[in-house]
Image (cartoon, rainbow, N blue to C red; front, side, top):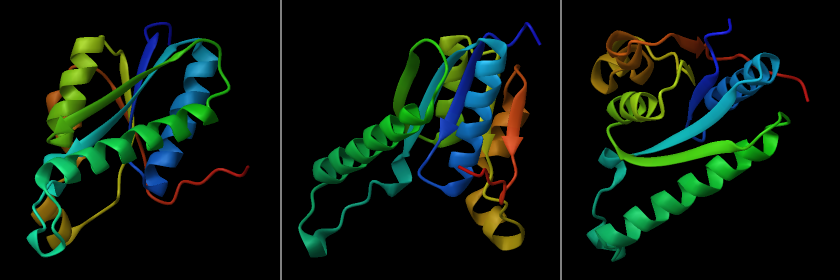
Length: 150
């Protein structure tokens, strides 16, 4: 387990991400590893809503602000030593996770999965599956429904 000195935790604002973050933080603490936390703003959510008069720039700004707040909330959960490296990216989540993991030289990626199946999975794909298939580092995926008592 000495090879896991840089752990990248990919999150969004879901319960599955909370479980992944808690798992990643606990593992990082046990291994005395550096932690990076990444939130990817999915570009497919940056749509124009002309009916409400919201410009693409306003939507982008709101999504990035939400991402920053979410990352900060996760960082406040961390009780380990050292700083948490924060990453906020825009794009296709699976691709951005791979890019940041490679750039930061992560040795382990921790992420949750929404557990979609059937048509939903076929239509939206699985970010976790994409990352697993295209990375050269281990990926720890926390299942849906994994919860931690406070």
